[in-house]
Length: 94
Image (tube, rainbow, N blue to C red; front, side, top):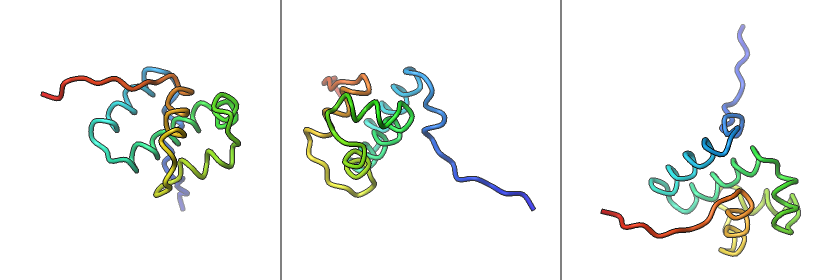
């Protein structure tokens, strides 16, 4: 019998280009919950300890804030976004 493992996208987010592509796709197509979960995947791929240090948050707080259906404050999302090397820009949606 073959044993299967659960798919973990964080294993495939191994460089900044992949991270950017993934997050941009989720930002364009997803809802707020999808975005927060994607940030959690990216934080896990980069290293939750590293993101915790850069945001000034604890690892447990990050896991909780980025869990599916959590309701983190916008400030938390912004801190994580900046810690993973992102920012927010407006562009025309034509």
